[in-house]
Image 1: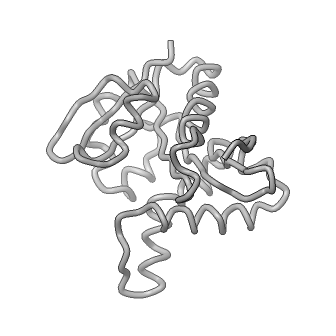
Image 2 (image 1 turned 90 degrees about the vertical axis):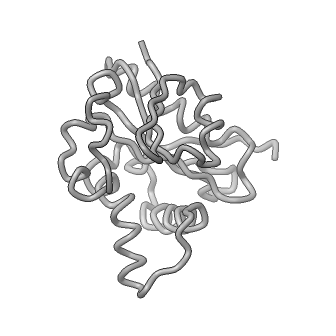
Length: 177
């Protein structure tokens, strides 16, 4: 690719609506769920996994832009997993690793547009959010994925070395200080 990628907070983008449309497109290109009973079911699925972040933590949503302004990836983050009670009511199994939130209070989810993967964009997004969390004095960041998910090795290479499996879920933590 050889392009310079710019990382911006969602809140700093002049055309937030276009960025949100691109985020939705990337989300559905990245999810393993491909069928929905209705457009409302599809919208509810998107809202489950991105709605709180976009509404309540937009400063922790990072957008990756190519030189031509194309949105090529995004990261949704939360710096206070224990304090984000609406997520516990919305996201299935959110509290399964609540005992790890003190050591790793922040969490994230990242997706990159197909065709732009394997160019370091996801790693740039993760490192930017981790740097932001470290600057705020947070001791760590985490994510939860599937034990056999294709993204596990990506996260391990990105410094998520503290792993804990519970059933089919895998907690991965990265220390920041």
